[in-house]
Amino acid sequence: MMSKIVRTMASLLILFALIYGLYIIMHGHLTPGGGFQGGAVFASGVALLIVAFGSDNVHKSLKEHHLSILESSGALIFIGLAFGGLAIVFFYNFLVGSPIFGHIPPSGPNPGDIWTAGVIPFMNIAVGLKVLAGLSAILLVMALATTLMEVEE
Amino acid sequence: MTQGIPFNVPFLAVAVMIGIAFYIIISQRNLIKLVMGLSILASGVNLFLITLGYREGGVAPIYTHAPAEVMVLPVPQALTLTSIVITVATLALMLSLVIHIYRHTGNTDSEKSRIMKG
Amino acid sequence: MRKIAIAVSLSVFVGFLIATAFLIHPFGYPPSEMDDYIIENTQSETGANSAVTAVVFDYRGYDTLGEATILFAAVTGVVMLFRRKKREN
Image (cartoon, rainbow over all chains, first blue to last red; front, side, top):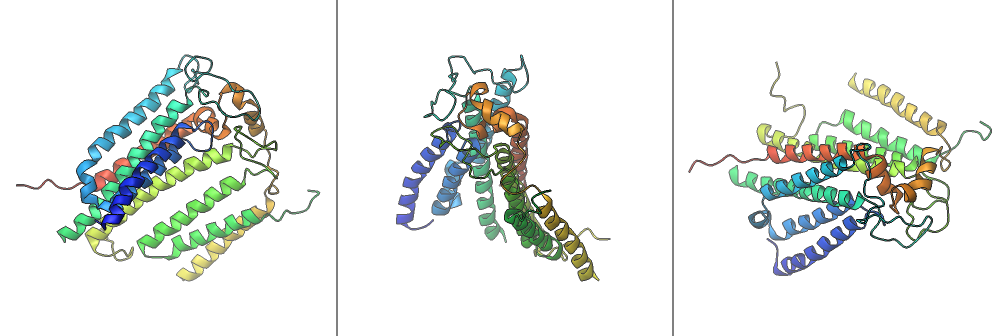
């Protein structure tokens, strides 16, 4: 548990880190980025919280049981979308041309349109949830283990 | 080959990095230094993948507000993304195993922590 | 004895790597038939503006599925290694 200035600034900065990570996940088909990069940005925000507040205080609100539910639902959504286009082939992009996320951009350089790219934005969200929950669980469990080792021995 | 033997600087840098990483893995005894050597090896391989797909004077393969030049190849960049995520997962598992070995045997030397001998 | 074995094997291996660095294609002019097809037809087949995202999730989706499985297995292994025993109260 660090001093009062560090705790106040950390609880302000976690909001900016969350919004920045979700922006990178959502615009994955227009700009560089995607699911993996956005999940890693958010996990670095959780690392800031653990350093500023101490791992015992963070463990009171963020248990690894709930993070495991989030990660498993991300994996199940990803596999469900892969089975969605099974009529033609396993990973078929079945939403190109339909009214949800189905516009086709003009060829060549253009300002991007967010309602394009078929089933790719949903896959980005699923993989982003998975990486977010997985990396946060790794950080939390390792920080808890090192504090307990000092108490036991 | 009409243009002689090319002198590629990035591929030589990759060869030096992989050589240093293999020397660390073979000759060090401390477990944490072994994990560091594996991390340098992974960085060398990722650098090799990216420099395989560079085109002279190219820009990123993204069509949003793109300048009108040739584009670099997109497939090696996708493979490097996968490789980086797998490296992070493997290093996390290896470091937690090192913590467990330290708890059970008391030191991080790979020669002195052999309990199942003989 | 151990040092001689390390020196010989390491010099053979690094010599092989440096010979590869001289015999590969010149830096900046790669062979690219598959990638030319992908750059031409990304916007009409997938509808995405970014070729890298289309390759990761559409043209090579199996690799992303395998990588998600590896990430899941590694996180399961780390969380399982650090469980605490239930205290008998």
